[in-house]
Image 1 (tube, helix red, strand yellow):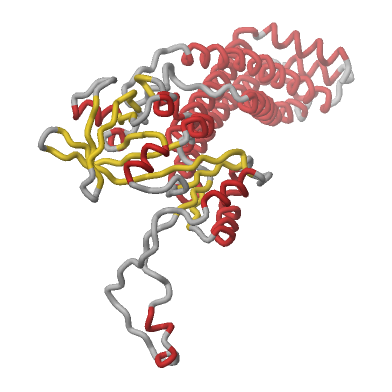
Image 2 (cartoon, rainbow, N blue to C red):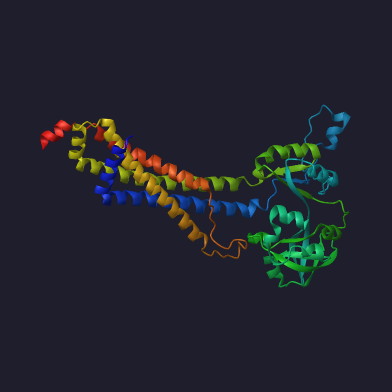
Length: 418
């Protein structure tokens, strides 16, 4: 493409600068909203998924209380070839604690696919509030591992997460549970186990997950404290939470761990399939709306170029009469369309970045999301790359058909008509 064609395209753009400006503004607005919408929806997806996924292990190892797969009558030689009709089966004598947990933890420490692990001990308890016993759960955790892998310390809104290790017989309560019991940091509360044993624990903090129903029953203490409350040995734990380096390997790795360690294993995809579906749907809607905006802007460019061709038929006829080919005329109008798309797209990217930054500074304070201070924005470079590519593609096709029409104009018919 020679410089003369570029110069002619520039002259036509300047000659109809108002129409050019309208077309460029349409592209700019479309790209601005496209980038802003994707950035905001991406940030929203990260926030919503983080509420659960940041608090959920990729693989959870545990022992589920369930009936034995092999009943006694099935193992009796006298009834080996008989049909067994068994009903009202009750759970066996299997326990919630993980067998040989120390060896499992050592094996996970040497597993190259494991990012980290955190042992956990969960027990049902009652919080004694005067004459009322509130149902609740106490979680014995390794605070350092829990904070590293699941951001536990970020959800402790009052007090310090490390205090459950530093202060003996201490506990961190869910913030809604603390409100119901009317307790403050430093107060001593009384809990009771399912066997009726009473213990006194000191409140050192309050935890807020963002899920109100959980904050009404959840509490946290060190593993040693919960083992003492339950009367268990130092090896007793009920869960091992594992985070992998690649979350996509969780389903297959969970099956391998279940066979290798003879425990139940639940992967994150199985436990939270609805959250992945919700994120995918929200992202799809964002792309659909953004592309629709670009297509609408493309129709605007198409109409403007059609009007320009109609008004510039004399000029097109003169160009073709003086030796310009139909291909040259087509290239002139394609250059006009691509110029509008490129410069409008660049301005749109800058506008999208600026608008996203403004939204990112707007305060977003809610009691249910203590870790979120402003509206979430995801500054993924892929959004900007997709925006400029779609801008150029849309404007190319918007200009292609009018340009092809211009290339087929017969200069003899136009000049004869004049």
